[in-house]
Amino acid sequence: MISSGTNAGVLRRFGTAVVATAALLVGGTALSTGAQAETWRFALEEIEGSVQDMYAQKFKELVEQRTDGDVTVQVYPYGALGTSQDLTELTANGSLQFTFASPGHLATMVPEMGVFNLPYILSQNNEVNKQVLTEGDVVYNDLAPALKDKNLKLVTMFPEGEMVWTANKAIRSPEDMAGFKMRVMTSPILTEAYRSMGASPTPMPYGEVYGGLQLGQIDGQVNPIFAIEEMKFYEVQDYMIFAGQQQFTTSVVANQTFYQGLPDERRAMLDEVTTELVDYIFKVQDQYAEERLAKIKEAKPDIEVIELSEEERAAFRERAMSARDTFVEMTGDSGKEVLQALQSEITETEQAVTD
Image 1: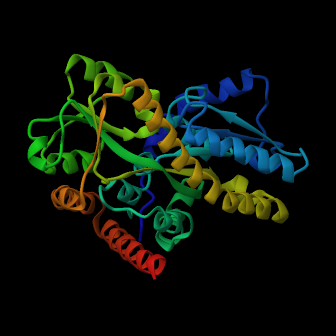
Image 2 (image 1 turned 120 degrees about the horizontal axis):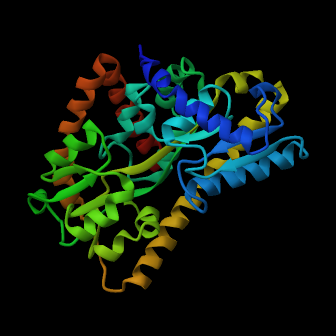
C-alpha cells in the first residue's frame, strides 16, 4: 500500500499558508467553503504566459461558459500567493480550489510520486505519455488515492516539454560529463542520476541559475525549452543538448472536499472540461517548444543544437538506471511496485499505440 506521508510539513508551514490566505482576504474576495464557492481559485507554479497559464486560462473559459457565468475562475500566477508548497497547503485546506503541483513537490507527501523524477522513465512517444498520465491505472488507481488522505484530488497530469541540457561544450557521452557542474533541482533521485551519468550535480535556487552560469559557478543546467527562453539561459550558454532523458511533468490537484461537495452535474461538467483539455494542452506544449526554440535561435543564431542519437542516449540511459535503485531505497516495496507497474503500463501502451 502507498503511504500518504506525514502531516508534519503542513504543520510546520501553517503560518505561511495563513499569511497567503490573509492576502486573499485583503485582496477583497472573501473565502467561502469549497462546496459553496462561486469563485474557483486556481494557482500556478509558473508565470503568466506559461504552459500552466495557458491551461488555466482555457479551463477558466470553459468553466465560465458552461456554468453561464455562475462560476468565475480566478487565476493566480506564481508568486501571488507564496511558494509551491504554500499553494498545495492552501488547496488542501480549501482556501484554493485548484493548483498545479510538480511530482517532485507531491513526493514530499506521497514519496511514490517521485517516480516521475526518474530519467528515461516516460516514453519518447507523447501519445503514450498522454494515455499514461491522463488516464493510466498507475496514476489514478495506485497514486491518486494516497493524495486523498491530504484532502487533495489528483485531477490530471501532463508534460510541459522535454528537459534539455545547456552547456558551453558539446556533450555526447557520459565521458563528456566528467567534472561537469550540472545544476539540478534538489532531489536525491536527480542527484544520483546525474552523478551516475558522469556529472557533478549541483543544486542551486532557480533564480540564481543565470548568474551561476555567467560566473562559472555551474557549467550547465537542465530545463524545458520554454524555461530556457524565459530565463535567458541561452545567453550564457553555447549548446542545447536533447538527450531524451526526461519530460518536465506537472499535475493539477483540487481540494478533495470541494470536489466531492459539488453537485453531480457540476462535477460532471468539471470532469468533461478536464478531459477536453487533454488534447489542447498537449498541442500547446508542442507549440511552445517549437516557438521558444525558434526565439532562441533568432536571438542567438550561433547557438548549437545537438540531438543525441539513439546509441548516444543509450549510454546515458544505462548509467541513469542507478537512480531507480535510489528511488526504491527511498520508497520501499510500495515504490518498487509503482515503478514496475508504471514500466509495464508504458511498455503495453507503446505496443498498443504502434500496432
